[in-house]
Length: 151
Image 1 (cartoon, rainbow, N blue to C red):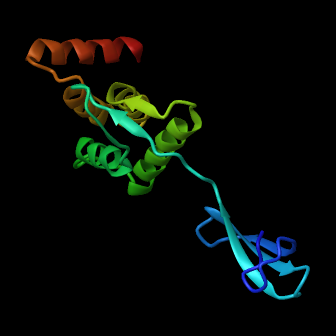
Image 2 (cartoon, rainbow, N blue to C red):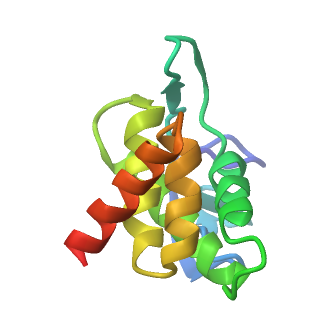
């Protein structure tokens, strides 16, 4: 780590601790050459995720879109916002942990459905109806029957 005061490349870590948000590590360093102290922050570098939509267009990943879709599915249902935030974070981390930099909306939708299915059946059917683009009552009934068979 380059010293901001003298430019020397050698320093030692004097103290390390997590930041308040828990997403980075704060390190106090001391320059070997000038003995002055400075602070650095270490964070995990996350590569940008590109979402491939059904029509083939691409856009940057936006966790708020997942969260908003779940909020709509859980409308007037009893669920803690913290649970929806947790699910969104799980999905984002799962995507980040893959080696692929592009993910389809279909894959994201399946991840959301798998997680909300265990929380609320009505919200699951609501989300599925939008995600799977039900065209008529028959496809809606078919999804409900499939859900009941798996249960």
